[in-house]
Image (cartoon, rainbow, N blue to C red; front, top):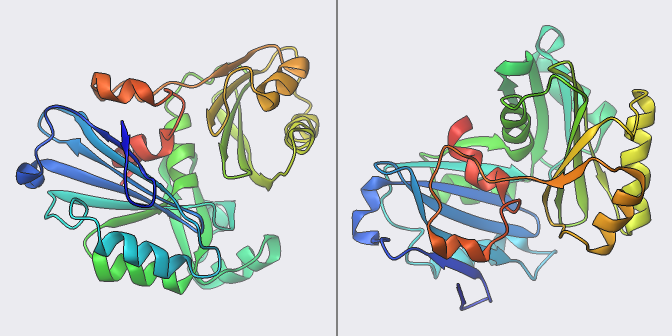
Length: 281
């Protein structure tokens, strides 16, 4: 692993060859303060490259991402297929039976802030639609640089992937990224709760988790909780959660793919949404 311009994290396998770009699928994550991408060899189903940026600008994210892309030789190659996931934008989940495209913006505005163009993803496994909004400036980046990319909210990708796990018992998935947590709860293989919360402290995080459990009368003694994203085993966030939730563990990478030894520098519960994106687009 090495760092370069803008101090990105770069992970590259010995087998990576950008001259064979047409053998790779490009997965991208875009957010107000996040930009990352990875390359999957679609012949070997092996991840050979990943690059993770931390953005410094909040007021002009689009300009910073545009500059990064313009200076990144790898990402501008001609790949076999492409996908983009929008990260941490306002959203709400509704049953497909109640979803109407013409009412999507009204439904979203009733539940949360509308930040730009309103979009919706179909989550087939749950017979639901995720309605969300993305700033026009971010969508312009996608249309300019990745016009052929399939687009989805990362939240839709996470729900779809969690649905593939064994959820016979009470199970919770927490995805933490840049002081936002997405809490997704299953009971008897049914999705019963999905919501996101902004937190500043470990106490905030604990409150939102316990509040969500309480709403559904889920016992902290029985529920299994799996953590993904920006948390480390035995850091203050993990330790406080463990004081209240004993069946707590870090998640794993998707088993469908091979990760070379170079990826060992990245903890297995990190960037689950990025590495599973290709499965849901």
